[in-house]
Image 1 (cartoon, rainbow, N blue to C red):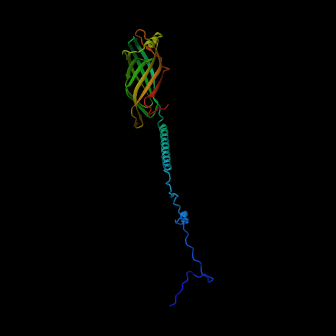
Image 2 (cartoon, one colour):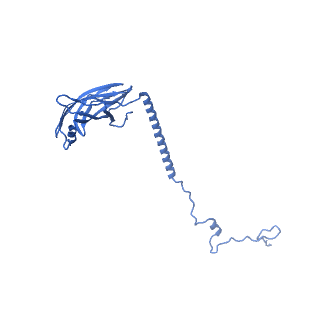
Image 3 (cartoon, one colour):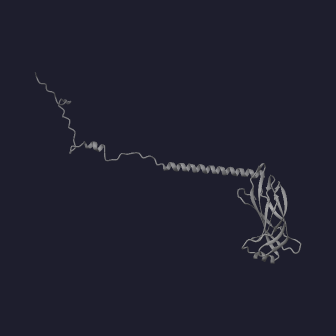
Length: 260
C-alpha cells in the first residue's frame, strides 16, 4: 500500500500553503490573558444604583399638609366673616346700657373697725335692640369708696324686651366690720371735705335671646364711677349728682364681644 500525505494547512488562493495560526499568547508568569484582565477589572467596585432620598418626599408631604391646613383655616375664617356680616345685617346687635338714675344717702357712720350706712339706689337698664331680648338674673350690688366697701345689697332679676327701658330700685346697707389691716384714713379724709367719692359695681348673669335662639348665661360686670355725695345732716338724706356718671359694661368671659 502506498502512504497518503495529508497537507497540514489549507492552500492559499495563489496555490501556496497558508502559514500556521499563531499560538495564543500567555502571560509571562503563566497567568491568564492580560486583555481579559483589562476587560474585566476585578479591582473596580461593582456599581449599584442608590435609591432616591426619602427626605424630599417627607418635605413635600409636610408642605402639602401645611398648605391644605392653611387653606382650610382661611376658608373657615371667610365663612365666619360672611356669617357675622349676615348676622349684623339681620339683627344689628348693640350692647345694653346702664345708668344710675338716683342715689340717696340717709345714714353714714364710720369708726376704726366698721362702717354703718344706708343707700337708696335706682338703676336704669336700656335695651336698644329691635330683635334681641335680655334675661337678667338677680344683680349683686356693691358700693366702694376707694378700696373700702361702704354698702352692698342686690337687685331683683328681670326680663328686658326689645326697645325697652327698665328701672329697678333697692336699698343698700352696710354694718360689717372691716377686714384686718384695712386702712380707713383715706375715707376719713374724704369725710372732712363733706364729699364722699363712690363707685358702684353690679355683677350678674344674662341670657340673650336672638330670634328663636337662646345663648347660655354669661357673666357681666357694670362699673359706674365718678359719683360724689355729701354727708347727711339730721334725718334728711342727701342726693348724689349722677348726670355725668358713666357706666361701663364688661363681659366677664370674652367669648361674645358686644358690639359698640
